[in-house]
Amino acid sequence: DTGVSQDPRHKITKRGQNVTFRCDPISEHNRLYWYRQTLGQGPEFLTYFQNEAQLEKSRLLSDRFSAERPKGSFSTLEIQRTEQGDSAMYLCASSAIQGTGNTIYFGEGSWLTVV
Amino acid sequence: GEDVEQSLFLSVREGDSSVINCTYTDSSSTYLYWYKQEPGAGLQLLTYIFSNMDMKQDQRLTVLLNKKDKHLSLRIADTQTGDSAIYFCAERYSSASKIIFGSGTRLSIRP
Image (cartoon, rainbow over all chains, first blue to last red; front, side, top):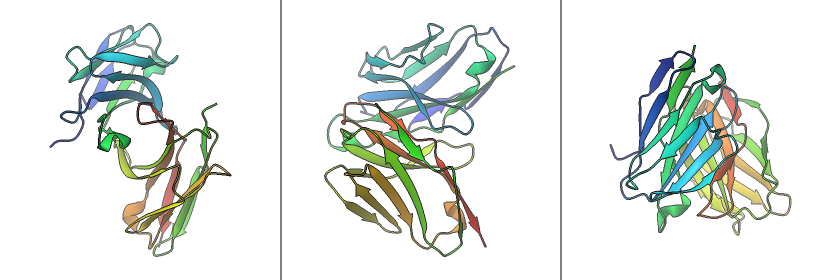
């Protein structure tokens, strides 16, 4: 499977705990995006990397959220001290810079439920 | 500002054509996309169109762009039960920027 891979697919956590999601982009895709989607809404942009550089962060990304892409390949999104309002699906996407860079491909998402 | 709007629901009869509409506000948008999302799944890229195009056809899908009115539509010919999903319209300023999504249109198919 050469698509965008996300892990875990589902996570249930207690309020106040930390959670981390991992995204493996399509091989050789330089750009990697994180989005959040709540029920009945479209995906909302969180942050975006080009290689290892984090180029843009949304105001939605509070100080409890941190994303990294240390080697320019996989990325992690960590949420500290989770709150019930963090319950959502976290989507990762990737794209190339050249050639097919017009297209952004999404993974299957990681569902987070905070209880 | 960046804003993409879609109607929330559309119901069509199996075999008919579905037309899903979208309006956007950023006249600088260079790329406009349609994604499909089935229950519990991620987003599947259906098609996209450059802002200098008026129309793009891909099998059963036809995308029409009216740049003057900032209106985008997706027509699905011969709608099938497998087309039941939420369809998201999205805009992008450049190939180096993020995608902004609408709230999605839920397409339901009746027999």
